[in-house]
Length: 327
Image 1 (cartoon, rainbow, N blue to C red):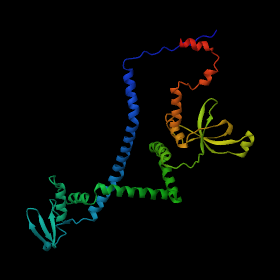
Image 2: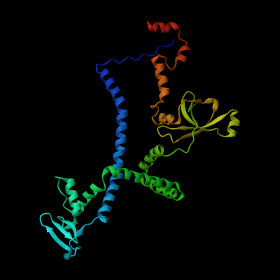
Image 3: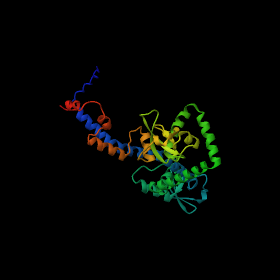
Image 4: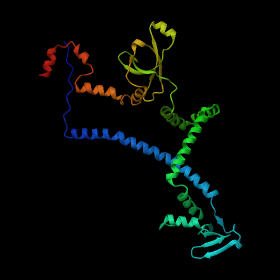
């Protein structure tokens, strides 16, 4: 006599369950766009802090050191200096107007005037180099002009670096550098993990997948996504006595590694999804389902058609059992 399996008691509804479900549903709707914005802001802030600002500081340093007219009292012949105003520290040096700063240096009068007009009521820098840095920021390093120029220079540098690494010498040098990095105890683990992610995101795949299929792997009854890469070898086809396919079975969550297999064509199921959709499905461990596949599942759910409807139809249980359960 068959024993009935014990039924699991239903958990009682708690008063806060509707509130909790509503909050979780709201989080599910809000988090994807919010996290997208946060990620883009983080990437932009990282580029500004570690790329644009260092380039801006380097440009400011070069301009201050090599494109400024800062003179010390020792460099100016005394016969060429004429004091015009003691109040503002205005001097004439060889016919040009200069202002003497607190640190005893001379800077052009138009630089001092431009900085004072720009700062308004704010405190004036004391040193000649500080005044010139403010003037250069005001005249030449305004953000609306600097950011597009520096971004263009950065993209050009990336292009040249990519061309260099694609050449034979660059590839060899980069390979030697990577081998050196992988020998470092702690850095190698971090570098290898980051490199796997960046290779997947930015490197064009060398593998040309024609379509996506489902195969029963690692055993029958378990379906796995696979990328068709070719028609395999003639010897295998002759041994199988039917057409075969070469497939790559990617692994989650890093689909650029996996297993290469040869399977019978008759044992594969062609899937109506693109390679990109299959990669998203694998990377998300099955969470991100292609929209049209998900829409079909939702339609079936709305119609109250279970996935194993065909099994239920062929079940040996009598129809009276279902009637009794309804009563």
